[in-house]
Length: 578
Image (cartoon, one colour):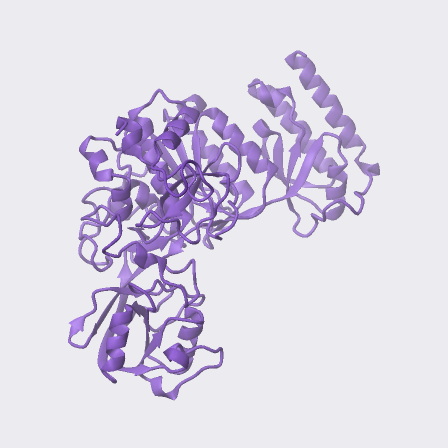
C-alpha cells in the first residue's frame, strides 16, 4: 500500500470511529475497571505510518485524527506521542467506555506511577532486627574499599585504571532521568550540558542552578556518573572518613544531561518519564541534537506494566540510545521499566560481590553494579553527618538517621529499657531517659518505633547501637528535631558498661551521603557503558550491550542467572579484553 493510500485508509477509519461514539457499547463485566483515576494512556492500532519513518506531515495528520477520536469520545487530550500512536488522556467513565469501543484503539490503560529506587543507607530496610547493609560496604574485610576520592564502587569497576588510560567517556552523553540536580554542587564543576523539567505539578523547578532536587536522589545518581576529580566541597560538610576533595564519578568525561522526570516526592508519571526519555533521545545528532551516542540512565521503577511505555522505550532504542534501568528494591520480581524489552535491567551488589538483599531478581536481570553504601553528592547541605564523643574518645564509626534532627546535644546517657534494651512497643515510655540521651539496642522493632518512643519520653538525643558488625544505617518514617545516631555494637556495650557517662552527639548538614539501592547500581553501569562506548564508537547500542554482557565478571551460579544476570559490569575488560 502506498503512503498516501495508507494515510487515506487511516483517515477514513478514524473518522468513521469518531462518528460512531454516541452509540458505543459499554464494556462487559469481564473488562477491568479502569475508572478510578481518570488519567489514562491510550494506544491506537499501529499502522505503516508509524513504522516506515514517514514524513512529519503524515504523522501530524494521523495525530490530528487520533486527537479527534479522543474528543469525540468525550475525553480530554493531555499529551500526544505521534511516533508511537499513543496519547495521555483524561476520561470520565462514559468517555472511557466510548474510547475503548473505537475499533482503531488497541488499548486503554491507567497511567502508571514510578518511584526513585534508592535512598539513604538503611532507609530501604527500616526494621531494626537485621544487620545493616550499609556497613557491609565499608567493613575492612570487604573485597572492595574506598581509596581517596575513589569510592568502593569506583574500585569495583576499576575506575582508577580506566582514568590512567584516559578512558573517561569523552564524546558520549549520559542522560539521567531522575528527581533533578543541584548543579551548584562543586562536584559538577558547572559542566552540566543540559536540563529540562518534565514534572508539571511542581512549580519553579526549571533552573538546574536553583532549587529543583528536593528529594536529593537525582544529585546522588548524577554524582556517581560525573563527579569531577578534585572538585569536592572541602573538609567541611563531608561524611566522616571521606576524602576532603569529595568523590569521583565513573565517567567524568561524558556530557551530562538531567531530565527531571520525578517530582519532589520522588515519584513521576508515565507521561513525564516518556517525555524525558524522548528528550534524552532527541540529543542524538540523528534526531537534531549534538550528541553522537546517548546512554539513558533511569534509577526508577515500580508500578504496572504499560504498553505505552514499552512502545516509547522501543522507539527510543530504535533511534540508537542505550536505555539502562534499575530492577527495584523489593527483593522480588524485576520492576518496570527494567523489565521491558529494549531496556537493560540492573541489579545491586555490595562490597563483597554479594547480591544486595533488596535487589529484585528474575530472568530480565542483565547486569549488576555497586548499590550498597554508595557515597556520592547530595544537594548542598541536605545530607547529614554525625559525630559522637564519649568515654574520652570520638567514636570511629557513626551514622546519622536519614530524617534526624540537626544540632549538637551534650548530656548523660541513659538506658532506654525494655527486653534486651530494645525499647519496643508502640506505647513504650521511660522516665529514665527524660532530658537525657537515650541508648537503645537495635532489634525486634523498627527504628521509627524506637525513636518515637524515645522522643515521646523526652529524650534529647537517640543513640541506637547495632546487633551486628558496623554502625546501623537508620531509616525513619518521620522527621525529628533531636539527633538520631547509629553506633557500633562494641561502642554501645561500652556505654552500657560505663553506667551513665556524658556524651556529645552532633548531626550536621553535609554535601554527601551514603545511599543504598538498585538506583545506585544503575548509574555505575550507565557510566561504565558510556566509557566503553567512547572507546569503541563504532558499536551500535545492541553491539555495546552484547560486549558488556560477554565481558562482565560472572557472579553467583556459572553463566547468566536470575540474581546477577551476566555479572558485574567490567568496563576495563570490555575495552582492553583483560
